Image (cartoon, rainbow, N blue to C red; front, side, top):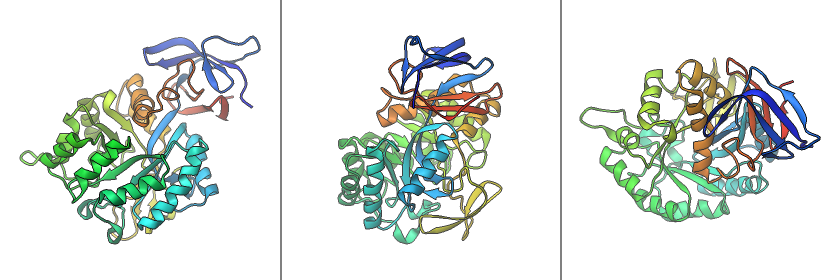
Length: 379
């Protein structure tokens, strides 16, 4: 059971900055402004306290798939990411038959209603065959608004994001439909031009699905979607900082150009995250994971990642040299705001859920608190 506790002596990252020798007070499942008389004090001198991580793009982990797994499988995948600091996770699907996706949406919506996941992200089937990545080309389809609506209805209000190639027939109308229903329209797996991307943004698209990946490169005469997505303040750009999906220079270019307030660090994790090398499936496609890199068995395309957000946090600070406060913004606050749950998670403020990650001086994960209960006890 959640109890009262004071996490004391650490460097605490707040929306207003970092507090040295600070403390976070937990009363039950919430962060409190003052400590109850019976609160236990836990000395975390030499550590960092940051908000629980929020992952808006995640296909599974711990050997379990959010697209194909049973309820127990999904819960195992969610727990795997909690062990790595992700206290709020959106379950992402991959391209499949429409009826199967609708059925999956029904199952995932029940877990969202129970608070196990924070909603559903449909990545496909409304994407470009030119930029399909690890999606089955045979199952791709144009983003017909009626079919998009079918998935929204199946999700029973739990659909949070749909990734679209907005240049395809029906793409712009589907963006408008999603915006009208309060669902994020994300531009990704796209072969759009710069001008087509601007049109989609003006129609209501607000997220770039894993910027750079599965879209045309930045050209000097044909800037393509990357330039349009980076330059527009209405767009939040997803970045996969695992050292495989992006060259460090590309990662830093995007982070510094968009600014910390417009970046969401994601995993795009698949089953092997937190589990290990071997043979897996991503939807209907076979995937081989070797040395932590997931690729399609046929063709060798990158097939999601094995990343966990604690590694993304550590890499962003120690390899890329980003300020800790900026990383917290990109890995907790921004995604929480995107999902509309910043009133509950995404920062260490009184009244919010007691979701806290404890990091050591080298930014390695040492503890995870979710709703006041230790998932990983730092002691």
